[in-house]
Length: 357
View 1 (spheres, rainbow, N blue to C red):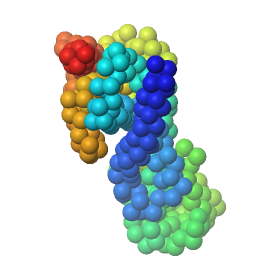
View 2: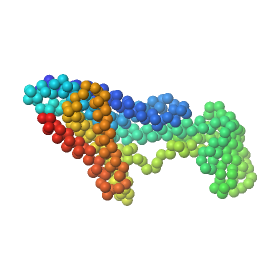
View 3: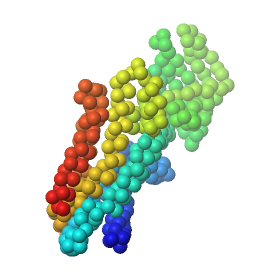
View 4: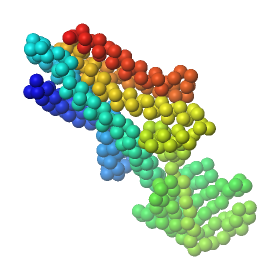
């Protein structure tokens, strides 16, 4: 019996590892669609590679259950095809005993996914958002081309006569003041850099003429040096309220305890907790559901198994996403509805397994 368990366990583990790497890599490629505009504008390759590497980790929460389901379909489909399951039954070994090691591996990966969902993925998503914002901010400096007026908001326009790296010359800034008047800031030279936060372009202007010098006045003035900050993060503004998906378990609990006056936000966080738990439990449920599906349909073509696993996964995740979208409607109890696919899969998988036995 130990030899059989070792044989099934090692075969299952090897199949899961291979499918997991391929599945996660393919899913990570989808993240590059977010960077299409940045790639076209020449974003730094090291930032693109870093963003892609972070995507590889964040997609584990989706690829682990799908990989377990695919591996289950492939392995037990082969065992059924080769009559190995029939041989096990003739020796008095039930199908429940045969799936013991895959279920244990699924339980271990479910625990791993809980850690990913509650601790790793939120931090990675936050880092990705920061990295994406930094790339957009740094590329925004490339918009300041020579000889063109660039609007950096409703009250500010900039034209640079000549640019050599960070050095700029013949700078003209048109600024609309609060009283509606127009201020001209003309500089012979200066230095351009991105602020550490990535929110502003910092201009250190030299030999500057400002007309009018004072708001409400008419006379101009001259200064030797005039530092100014230009907002450039118009396309990468981050919300003051963090998305539930970017919060770790500790942050969710703390915010739920601190937002008694915001019940809707608190309920969204409750739905997010239940969703993450359900997605982790899918790793175990998919093994239980995948075994009878593989035995009833023991096709040799791996593409059939892959297609079937993707179909089941899409239906499963759709059943989770739809209740999660009802987070603004507590009367529908979406935090309970997200458990529906788990319960249906457990009942269906158990019923099919009993039929096979």
